[in-house]
Image (cartoon, rainbow over all chains, first blue to last red; front, side):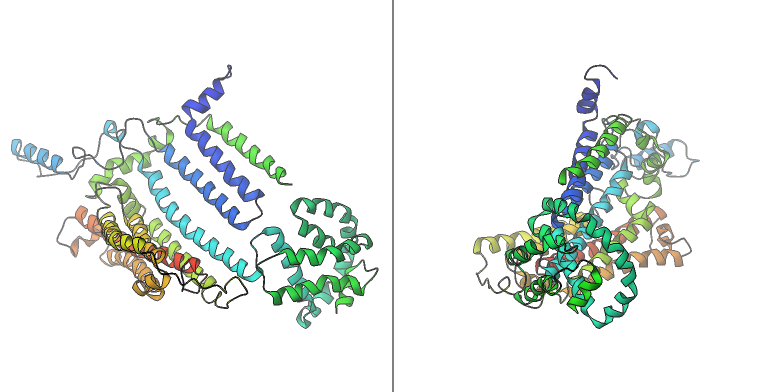
Length: 270
Length: 250
């Protein structure tokens, strides 16, 4: 087993089905983890599912076996066994006319394993239904936020959170949380050197807007330039929505020149 | 940043390939899955317990009937959920995205072909549904083929054209009727003195043997599944392709 090429030989020839299933599964897994587009994630999920189905069906295969449907001569209720029973009955008349009997174990080997087929049959249809549900959710997200890109979505969610914090309902809640936010915020500013670096990998839009949360003096100036650009670049959103969203982040920066903590931020926006 | 995801992906792959060494070989008749008493019991006894020669159908609708019933319910719930998420959500015309209007005539060749093909597809769907006992097929497959025929109509003309034939309320009613058929057969066999979904007790209603009663009950159950799957497939398409507005083409 550990000789030269033995493992490769085994994987490529004797267990090729497992290799294919692992490769498909990894493609699906990678798409689900790494892709930022929700539709691509769903495609990855479907590929993943296909890999599992392939795995199940491939372990139900038997050499020289047929599909799990009785051949005419094996069917206990088939015409062949009925004729045999009648013939048997004519020779010794004491027995009941016709009693179906189980298959012998040698005959069992002639049929593929039906159980994985049954499991995958329902899994496929339910998979289609759940995929439809997931697509409906994506469609709804697209209607609400104008995008299915995950990073753009996060930015917009943060903005809608900021808008929500303006409402009188949220004021009562946020006032209770204010001390907790105070303690959290210094940590966030400390991390501000690392966050822009990470976010540049995600996409340029994210880099500018995420940095606005810690809002150090350095990022503020660049953000004021970048932010309108990043908003204008996004198509597919209504102009009215963009108008409100666009006005929010610059407002924060313009009102508080040296704002570092969130309470100040809140006062400025209020 | 994306390369970081390759680390878990490849570690999972290495684990799976490492485990693949212990899996049975391709087509090994002595693999644990094929040697398990459950599988051999299904292969040996399906023909004795029922008159259905197709083991997959028998296992699906009889031995694992409870499972299949709730799989059908899952399909139904997915249809309802899509309806709840999308219905009425996209009604507002939004910006330049929705402003265009595509008023092209449906293509003559396409519509004529579809007109010829759709009856054949629907007949084939019924064949797959009703012949699922003795050949590959059954409720799920026949239902999907049936739903595909309506989707084909919606693709060739537009969604309104298909919704005239299969409106969304009708879809949901048919889907519910399918589950009622399935559960009704189960309850009927329960009231006949057996357990839930124990079809053999239906022999008192039908003038046939216990095995043949299972045969007919499986057929009825598959018809229920077919109803649900066909209508939900079309409902999913109709809702997703029009963002819940239920008009216009793709």
